[in-house]
Amino acid sequence: MWPTIVVVEDEAPMRRLLKTVLAAQGYLVFQAESGRRGQIETGTRKPDLVILDLGLPDLDGIEVIRQLRAWSRVPIIVLSARHQEAQKVAALDAGADDYLTKPFGAAELLARVRVSLRHAAMVPANDGQSDFSVGHLKVDLLGRRVSIRGQEVHLTPIEYRLLSVLVKHAGNTLTHRQLMHDVWGSARADQGHYLRIYKRQLRHKLEEEPARPRFLLTEVGVGYRLAAE
View (cartoon, rainbow, N blue to C red):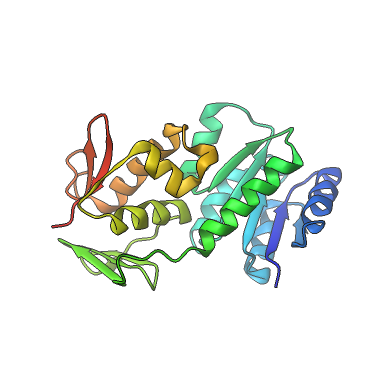
């Protein structure tokens, strides 16, 4: 069965273009012209992916991301005319998985879609172990749940992917480039600012003192390591 995608875009010509491009690859596409309608479609259709414009008539797209992230881990690709780095960072901080600026090429969009769907389908393994724990941090890899002192912690899809890669190699230092490749794929392997954003977000969610981390450790000039004990 082909994946389902919800496109949230207020401009009808762009919605039609996106549907044509995606449907030609076999994807089942549902459309929404506003942020609220996009949330309804996402809740109703349970899609495998959401493609979201930021300039919506009723809600700013970044607010839509925040609201979706309150109850869904569906991968979100932002497709926007906003080119400023601050806007990209804000969207990623809110929980978006990827950001593509308009105008865009159909081939690049489809590549981003494939990467997001592939990552979402991945079930990480830790040498056959389904659970990992260190201190008061526990990661249930099969259930895709993370808890601190027994309290579940909500992570975005990318935050969880980053943590699961670190769990798989707990105790070992992973280079910036290796983490970028494993989490985002080869196309983003040189864009380290994404990694810094999500490392910071993970620390704020997992660490009692993010400035003095206990779990997610920095190896200066090399990369990051998840404490194994």
